[in-house]
Length: 137
Image (cartoon, rainbow, N blue to C red):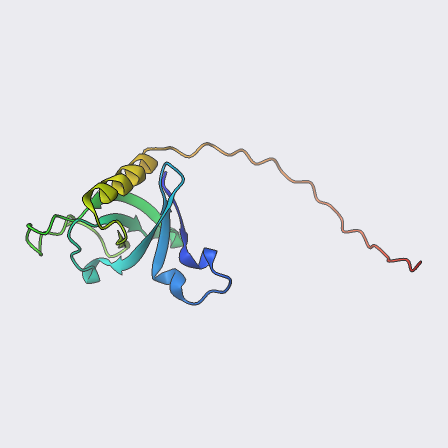
C-alpha cells in the first residue's frame, strides 16, 4: 500500500499548504510532491504522473497511479472517467522529462503493489505518573 503525508508534515507551522499539496512515497522510499485537485477542476497536464485518491473515512488512500496522455492526445482525453466526487486527483508536476516521469511512475506503481506488513500492537500497561521533586544542593 502506498503511503502519503501532507506537505504541512514537513513545515514548522501549518501554513494552509497541507490541503494543496501531498507527498506520496514510492517503493524506493523517495517522496514525490503532488498538487491536489478536485476531479472536476484538474487541468490536463500532458505526460504528468497522477494518483487517484479516495477520501473515504477522512483518510486519503491511493487507488491508482498513471500518466496523463501526451501532448499529441486530445486535451479532453482525461485518463479517468469513473472517478467519484469522493476522490481527488494528485498531480506530480516536477518530472518534466519522459525518463524522469517514467521513473516516478514506476516507483509509485511498485509502492501500490507492496502490502503493508501486519503490525501487532501489544497492550501497553497503565503507568502511574511519578511526582519528582528537585532537591537543591
